[in-house]
Length: 556
Ligand code: C2O
Ligand code: CU
Image (cartoon, rainbow, N blue to C red; front, side, top):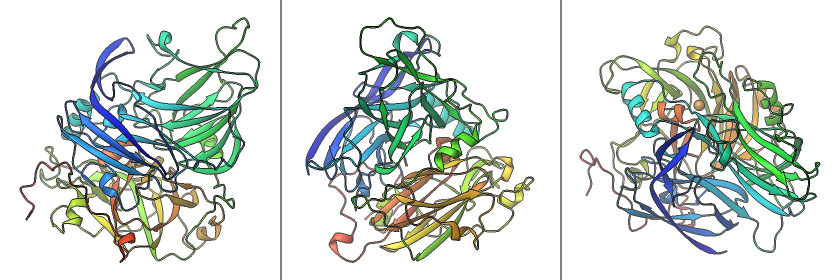
């Protein structure tokens, strides 16, 4: 295994899009940021030098970082922010991941512009479980906001207002031909007829699930979230924020130009919510001498419309682990801890001004009716140094009441939410099953792509309506379930997952739609040490960024 070093300089960079120039936070002046390239099992040191205007942390999404939550990154969970004028070096430890993952800022919504791909090749001498592609190509899809996103989010959070919606989708940093003032800079990708390419697609969008298609070309999905899946041949994929997909494309169509296109997929009712209808695009162009037909071909028939739940489900339901001899699955059969977690939008109970500067109830989101609040001292430091006051270890295994979760006219009272910083403590190697149950409180059921840090989980079951604890477990797939770090709890439905808590430390769980994350759809796990050095949390590095507001903690 090799060791690699990267320098990431965070700073404000001026960018012009949609006819306007604004300043965004970038890494090394580029949007998207640099791609990290490693082989399976390597270690990477990323020295982050913050020359920007505000504090940020970075997260290595999907990298399990065995025993090393110190470099995992979510602000207030495993560290405090790297403040302007300071440095921090992340030690990113790759273990069994192989394929595509990504890195992103993990402070408020800064990941909108601070992100990049991670490409993990097989160990040298080993090969892919499919025939070697001729080349590969990273496709980073992000959302563009015309306003100052940080200001908008900070203000909305303080005043309890609705959070901002995006103004367009970029593919490798460009909005493409269907957006104002964007045609000149549309991202172009040249291919050779007959060659096969491995596309590494990342949904880095802050708040939207996406459909993605390339005109007239089939896509063969072979990997997801840093692991391999049974090949799926399709004309369109649905990818949730946080997810990564490895897709083979063979350039076998008549020489010409073809649109690569993406649009939002919404499980919401578009009338009720602000919504970004724009199409992000890039152009695939064959090399060679031929007269260019113009305009390029658009995937009219294969890029679904934004409310096409059927298309999304048809794709998602096909996902299976490769489950081969070289890439086996290891689904926990016996479960030692069972949790049933409601995933809700709801109202936060605020008797006085204790929740925010606005008093009275406000919109929030929750897991088992707990709406997460970030502590001022990160959970990991508090846990490691045995300090109280940061979090409590009483995240409930069950919701406070059982009701018809997906019913049509639920009173708000069924899901009055309380704020808290509650974590669930797991023993080392505990085998965990969680059923996430979507609810229709406030008639606001929608998909929630839940993401875990430090582990992957097996998606053993999913379905529509309320989970039936007698019947539904009989349908579980324990043979080849997808092994992922992010997967959607379907609108008015449920998702059952299993994993082994074999990574000591503190690990964040949250919806990867940042609107919901900001509103509190988060929790954290503490996985205890296993008793030996090799099964215990590593000691912290010599320097961790200090936390600002330490007044109330007993530091000795
Ligand atoms: Cu990709 Cu906690 O995030
Ligand atoms: Cu959500």
